[in-house]
Structure formats: structure tokens, C-alpha cells
Length: 326
Image 1 (cartoon, rainbow, N blue to C red):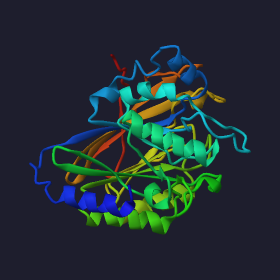
Image 2 (image 1 turned 180 degrees about the horizontal axis):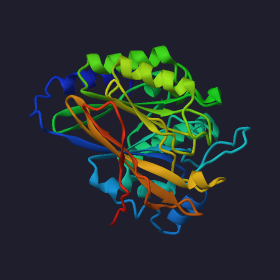
Image 3 (image 1 turned 45 degrees about the vertical axis):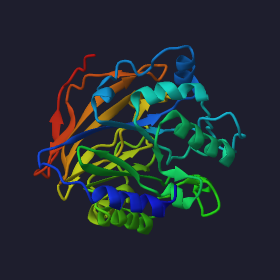
């Protein structure tokens, strides 16, 4: 689907979105999901590695970062880590997730052929994707979510090498995080009538506990352009939350299902719940998720709480400690 068609569809949907002011929609976001390696092997054995994170099923929409191609074709590119998951993992992913970002530094691990196969298989499995496509137009196309009269746009971008995974007008790949293009994409969404615009970023440096100056600058640029919030992943650790102009920036959710745990902090991630309405983000809450040695997530307890906040405040509070229950 072309980006022009997506924008036209967004304008059509937004034109009929009269609704009561109090209506809200809940979205859950998680960080990196690796369906290769131990998580993928568990799924192929018939196990459910996401069993204890039922909170995802309670949201109106659940979204994660798919950190691998899902394909049988292609050859591994020349990089330190390359991943490729079995298509047999997709039904389990679909059970818990309503959409995935493919804008990351592993989507192209097995070349363009496997990347396109991944997109085809996600579509066939009924899992919408964003942040990548068969060309640059599709890669930058918005993913539209509509519920209770509210129009929500998801945009995905990668800015961690290799840049050879970037889509071009003639080549499939991911949407690269060029400031000017991101501002233009957000402006198009706002002009077309989206009440909520959420960029999901793949950025920052691995294992760094705080965001870089580049992340802070780009996050503010996106908020200034009209983003309702900014959500990030990639560093494999959580990186904190701040409010800017009354809107939350969640710099990194860390890992969600990932078995390459080189440091203790790699085993702690967050799930994020956003409550949105026609004015944007009404409130947000993070909850700790802990990964075992096989990368399997389960609810955790934070002695100091995890970040949360609400509209009208420019400060971040601590939620919890909270123990989830199924």
C-alpha cells in the first residue's frame, strides 16, 4: 500500500471521528522481541513464552519491536549477530500482538529477499507492521489504528547501523530516522486528522543506562512536530522517562523476549501502557518485566517503582512496586 494511499485513507477515517470527550483507548508497548534462538525453539515445542504477560491481552492494542526477519529464504549478511526466525512462530506472536515495528538493525539480517518474505508472512498471519516496506514509500507509511472513534497513527524508524538496511524508492528495507522526513510524516498525520501520533524508535547505544544527546534532541524534535509521545527500544536496557511539553518520552523499554543476556540489567525490561484520547496521552504507566535465562518474560517487582505519569504534569512519578497476576 502506497504512502499516498495511506494518508488518503487516514483523512477519510478521521473525517468521521466525532466522539464523546471521555472515550479512551489503551495501548501496550514492549521492547525487543527475538523469535529466533531459545524463544523460537520454545514456541516450536508448543510452549507459550508470553503466558505470564497477559496484561498485553487486556489492552485495546499491543505493539512490540520484532527484532528479526521471519523467513526461510535469504543468506546471512556480514555482521556480528544475525537472526532469522521460523514462520512457525507467527501464530504465537499473533496471539499477543496487534502490530509490530520492523524498523530495527536486524530486520535485514538475511537480506532483502528474507525481509520481503517477512512482510508477506506478517500480512498473511494477520499481524500489521510498520517502519518498513517494499520501498521507501511503504516503509514510511503510517499504520492506522482506529477504535471508539479515535484515530491513532504509529510510525517506526531505525537509526542504528547498518544503514544498508534502509529502504529506497527501488529497494525494500526499513524507515531510516532522518529528522526532516520524520517531521514531515508527523505533520502529514496531524494534517489528515489523527488525534494521536506515536513514533516508535530504534535508537541509542547498547547497554547505556541513559539516553544520548542525539536521542534527547530527536525526541524533542518529534514532540515539537506534533507527536503525542515518543517510545524507544534497542539499547537492551531501560533508559528512563521524562516529560517534555507535558508529553512522555520513554527512551528505551529494554528487552521483552530476548535470550542474549550479557549483563544483569539486560534481563529487566518494561511494558508500557498508554491511555490515549482525542487530546493525546491521558496517562502512562510502566511495569517491570523480568527475563529468565532463556529470554522468557514474566512479571517482576520493582522495589523503587517504575515510571508513570499523567497529562497536566511535567514530572514523572514512580508506580508500584507492582506484582502482576494472571
